[in-house]
Amino acid sequence: MVSRHKLETCAGRRRLTIASEAEAEGATGFPTGGIPPLGHRKRLLVYVDVHLTHMNHVWCGGGSRTRLVRLNTKDLLRLSHANVCDIAVTS
Image (tube, rainbow, N blue to C red; front, top):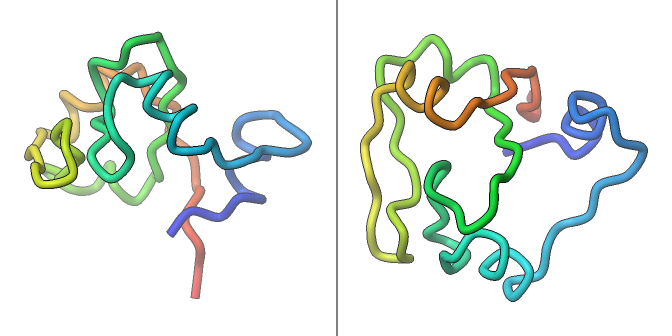
């Protein structure tokens, strides 16, 4: 889970809103529930929680709601030009 407050702070924005399904698909070219962190229709900012950087690989959306792709975390960070921040909801 992502903390909206932490993401706003990391992004340097006062208020973020969640994109509608149509907006998300229009920007990425992929349906919600299957949006990968790479290969979007438009260049988008990608944010990755710092805790993921300690993992060797991550599972991500694979372009459809029924597909996942396993990516090497270092490759994901490099290819997506991700912003690494503490954005996870803490319990």
